[in-house]
Length: 336
Ligand SMILES: [Mn+2]
Image (cartoon, rainbow, N blue to C red; front, side, top):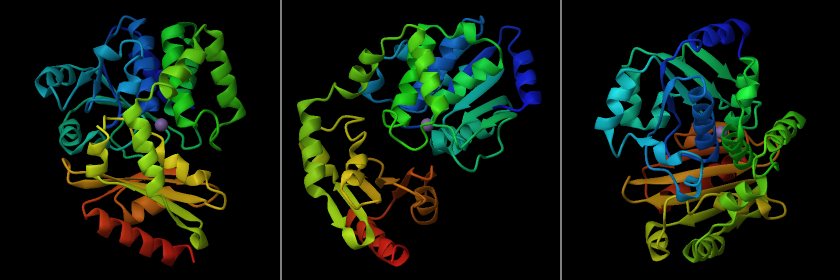
């Protein structure tokens, strides 16, 4: 819950039409897209002028979402986005809690804006840029938080099928289809209520998970063949080089979910996937764990990243070989 004082202040802000920008993090996932578009469809009903600005282009598997074609892209078209940000009365930041998560350039641009920021997010250790903050690391997803936020405002009658479709999407993707331990009874009750709003939940699952290309399936095959096990440390990891991505005509979003296969092996409680990005000169890393092994802490300490206890991301500017051998060495040291 957002604290009482803040929710009243936000409610007062929203009583007259405002110019509002809604921001997700860079490299969007289902929860960032669902929460930003869900809030967008809620706020437009209150006659606010609302713009969703994504830091960069987002994956095809999110492009079916209602009004996703209206989302503006900062990196691709900064000149069109800057006036929207300059004239905004309110900027919502959803599913992230540090401005640099929108990218280094966009992050420093946002840093110098003198605006009323409102944060809704479930990651650990929030920065202090927001005037109003709803931060709860126990939440399954930012989409679940947006649902509670709308209820706290007393405006739940505005959760129509578009809002519900967006919020359901983020809950499904961030909970691994209701599998992760962050899934609570309340999460299910929220999902049930969203289904009761008349959404096509079966179609949402199909749109999200059953639209792979042949190339993507071949790439998954390659990733699984590349999987390495360190059974004595209950650890597995996958690597994908730029050459391997290129060989399978890699499209944005194709590797979404690959990391989770590492945990499906019996006896493994920690896994990572290392994906080379030649254009950015980095190895992008995702970490997943079961039980109490804290990958947020691991990612923060060793790989310039962070996230949640059981799911986090990081990055390395070393080569793939250097990155992986450093990872193996660290695992051997800390998981003895
Ligand atoms: Mn999230």
